[in-house]
Length: 211
Image (tube, rainbow, N blue to C red; front, side):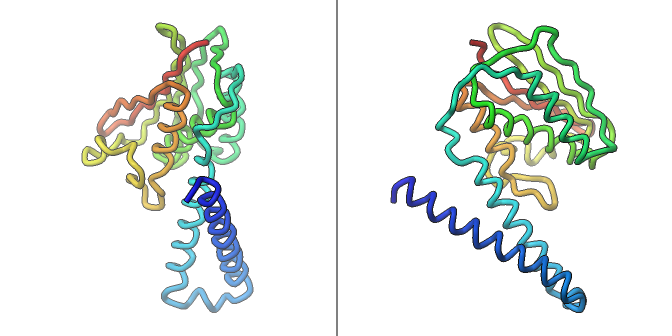
């Protein structure tokens, strides 16, 4: 089966899951008595999880096919922070951005997705409260993007598998975000590092080569 076949199958699955999820939401509004059924909450929860997983897989599609152009890292982070403030209004973003805007050759859409995944991961680790620090700098012909949260750190049992597919410590997590982020970064000839601070938080750093 070739790549086109897989894409067609995935497209059909995504459409079906989206339709099912929409129907469930409509039934939830029109038939309030369903909320008393013992399995209804499970159906809603599992369907929402499936939709989330399908959409996350969708964003990872074609990560090897990059549209390379000069990308301003600081500009991406500033725009993402504006969006994240709407989603997490009680969370503060401590931006410590490099004075001279660091430029890399990258696919802006996919790199944006990688950074957004880490920002969401940090925000959710702190339940939308407190402060997340983002630091950009240049070092040894590389651009480094570090995102530090204070969400308690990665559990000891997950620290060696945190970048593996379907590994997550979140109750409703898919375990895809970090794996997708790592793949996107590696497709840009970079790497993703984790420094874990048990009982405190963790720092994820994207390292990318400078042009």
